[in-house]
Image (cartoon, rainbow, N blue to C red):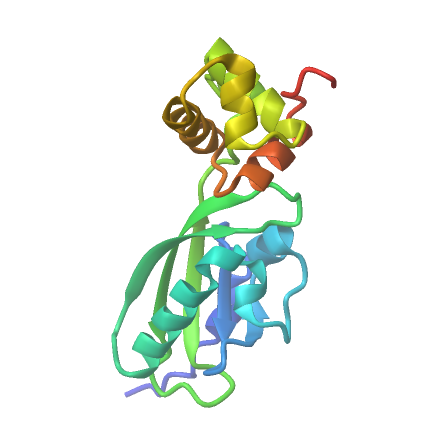
Length: 187
């Protein structure tokens, strides 16, 4: 019987088109493939949470803890922060490395979705564009309601729709996205 040599998977995985990383038990990246490097930059020695939106860091840390406690696979979605500056929703699938030591504990794959919708895809109504414009000027809910002769609840509903349409989690983020996409009337 012929004896088999150990397989060196990292050289093969370098060429895989899906961003993939290996991290240690603390979540520090010890290896990444070319696709991950293209998407996120050089992450060696950095915590894998450095490419996760701040609001999703605790979710990622909980998933790491689950894996270290023996959960064989964790699949979840988070917002990631690629080097191009455009947040993307990504599905993360990760597994512990069998026999992994302190330096090589977890293998993970990120399947990023396409970047957020373009300005023409925002699909805001005329009123929602007005609300967004006033948010861009720093107006409060009360000020928007008074300016547009609407109830505060109607303004809140418009703001919720604007946030959802832009993929934003806050008013400030919505204004930042609107500036980047040239959605505000003064641009």
